Image (cartoon, rainbow, N blue to C red; front, side, top):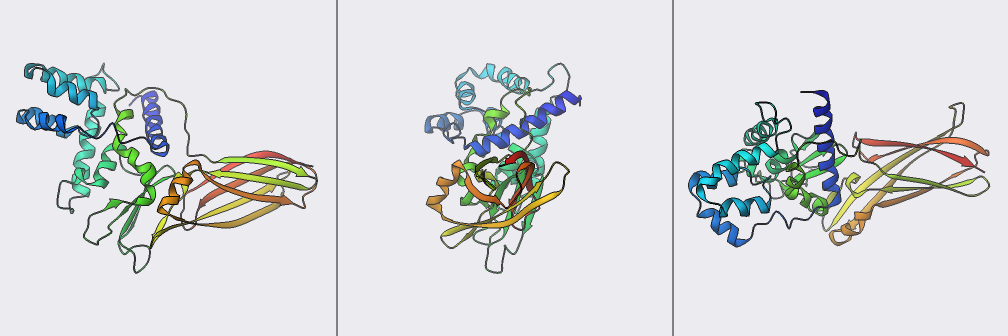
Length: 316
């Protein structure tokens, strides 16, 4: 694959992850009862097409497909895939190949839930976003009394699946519901041709500093919800955020450092308040006046994924 197409596809995947973090609505994904009725009345071949592309067909396309003349549907199907082809001048359609390869792989990976693997919740995410960058499996749960859990990560965004009833059926954890609903509508992005998009190298966090008085600097972090890895305990959700900070002078000598954990406990209702981010504040004191570089590392306790960010600060 040409390098520019590879870069564009990678950017597209990152854009999809950001769409999850933005909390895209489910409204476009839910089919109205009339559309469902019309789909059931389609001939078998036409009906199977709609079922096969359920994750990537838009509501507008579905409505058009069920209402056009039967003899026009074959041309519609050809055009449906051609519009998504990242390299229409070649014989191969990489998009179509990737989509059905993911369906086949999802059927292989998640075949123990009593239905086709790609129709399970894990299968749906797999088809839309591909294999996760990291997949952590806890068949006995986080602890002895917890249900089995899987944690998938796309970049720094965690998606948590829980086998709540110990029957092999994994559902997405409620702790992520505010953002994971966007998975169902991620086809909005997948419908677009591969193209150059704004660079989103990886998930970020806000970092600011204020020198309020001599020898005293206030540092403020704004940690996005997507970085918090929650665990449900009873009626509450718990996460432990770890922050490490190092201050270096112009000679790259370490003059100050800090490591602290920030436990977070919220109810399901309070989860919504975290959509705008979780604030973390700490102070830098007893440092001589001058210019420095502050490096901050943010992650979840026990998780190997973390984010580094640096900024120049001046201490009065």
